[in-house]
Image (cartoon, rainbow, N blue to C red; front, side):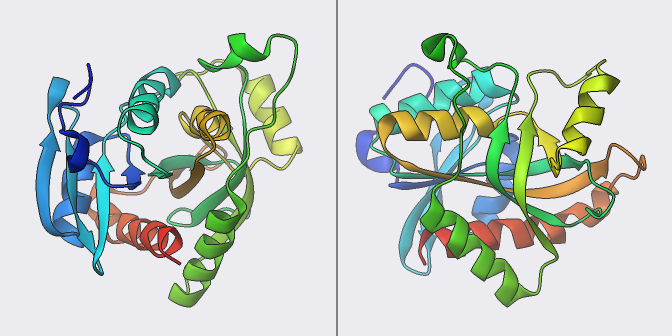
Amino acid sequence: MTVHIGAKPDDIAETVLMPGDPYRAKWAAETFLDDAKLVNEVRGMLGFTGTWKGNRVTIQGSGMGMPSLSIYANELMMEYNAQTLIRIGSCGGMQPHVGIRDVIIAMTATTITSPSSGIFKEVNFAPCADWSLLNAAVNAAASKGSKTHVGGIYSSDVFYAERPDLDEQMVRHGILGVEMEAAELYMLAARHKRRALAVLTVSDHLQTGEALPSEDREKTFGDMVEIALEAAFA
């Protein structure tokens, strides 16, 4: 048991999926896991452990933003020995060819700053995904026929951004989408020698203004969860 995770040591699996929204964690656990059990509800940040095709899996909410994710990822790695951590969540599309409902598998995650920035000082560390997870996720997405993009994303530390000039440079340099957590997850995984990946569903688009209606999200998010699970146990 830690400050933010009330689970017993054996309650957390070595493979953890991390949606930002705790209620998405609940939905994913109830939809995809067998014998899902609530193992954490401290501060309302729900976590569940069950099995998927006989493999133990924990689905733990991370909250919104890199500072919140950093708390849960640190505790999962250092206190519960989580070895594989996959962020599953929504993102905003940034490139014209990236459409609503598409899946983005994040090879790299650019950021201005994160909770780890102070460690690197003047170094611009390049956070990247674990190759084995990345490759397995691409194969899983292909087998499902999902429209998938693989490349760099941008992890922003603000939701209500007021930097159109920054968005312009992200687009110019090929960034596929924007979200708020993956860069810190990749940094922590590198530090603790764990495997990490982000599999994201495009729920809105910064250029076109399109947004995925809430009633259409469930199936698309389901594809993302299945890709993450297939990748974790490939």
